[in-house]
Amino acid sequence: MNKNEAMRILSTIRYPGYSKTLTDFKIVKSIEIKDNIIEVLLNLGAADSNKRQIIFDEIKAKFEEKGAKAKISTVQEKGSTIEQKHYVQSAKKRIAILSAKGGVGKSTFSVALTIALKKRGHSVGIFDADMHGPDVPRMLGVSERAGTNEEKNKIIPNEKDGIFSMSLGYVVDPETPVIWKGAMVTKAIVELLQFTDWPEMDFFIIDLPPGTGDAALTIKQNMDVDGAVIVTTPNRLAIADAMRTVGFFEQVGVKITGFVENMGYFVCNKCGGKSYPFGKTDPKYIEGLLRVPSLGVIPFDPKVEEAADDGNLMSVIDTEFFNIMDSIAEKIEKI
Image (cartoon, rainbow, N blue to C red; front, side, top):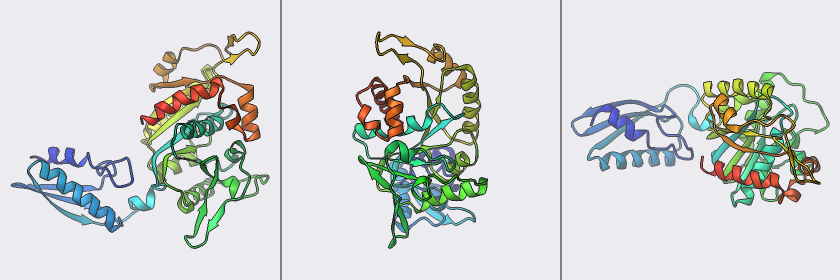
């Protein structure tokens, strides 16, 4: 066995509680091979003893399968450890929802996707990362302030219809404008992630504010994001903006799972015919521009928009809008 083969074996071992592997987190510092003994040096930082033992046992088992013996040692380097840096470990999958600009229905999509995943039998949570205009509470129909668990020194997420949620709107007066600079936005997001007592979840949806600002970078730096969906309208200007956004997130290491065309068409109540307010654009054409797959084309439905404003999206679950959301949720399940 050579070092490349040993590294390939280590690249199959996931860090406990995350979808990423030991090599993804770059905690494998060195590998030395002497006869049939593989000496592995790991930077495990402040990993708890249970996680350390899980990692050690899996490394030893993997190499034993190949007829080799693993000898493991560790070192703690300065800087943030994995546990300090990556929050919401209680979720199996963390999905960010992005948009290049406002007004494309991103928050409505985020909440609708959370509902669709819940309807498919998953435990779900949603985090409103828009510190300047938190809309998720209103769309969920939740106005109560977040509670606290004083024993754990944690914030308790609100829960409605089996969906857990956290937003700045639960901890400050929703009518008060938030006028913050970048550092304050970053601090607020990190503290909400760090001090919220999230339950075990299958999917955790992050509703990011439009663009590529401080909130997006903060989420990337403090959470193990498993996938991202970009929401756009099918007009040329929005697509051009979406191309730049895709490029940004690819550069910072966030995998774009796919895109959604929102408000792609309107169905006439009288004749049932479709009209295309932004022009009819082939999803394959947009796929070529963005270099990511289409997850679906969602119609504009006034009933859905009204239900979102009223915090009652569950009342329109039988619409064509939610039929398509269900198919998108099915694709998200495969991430």
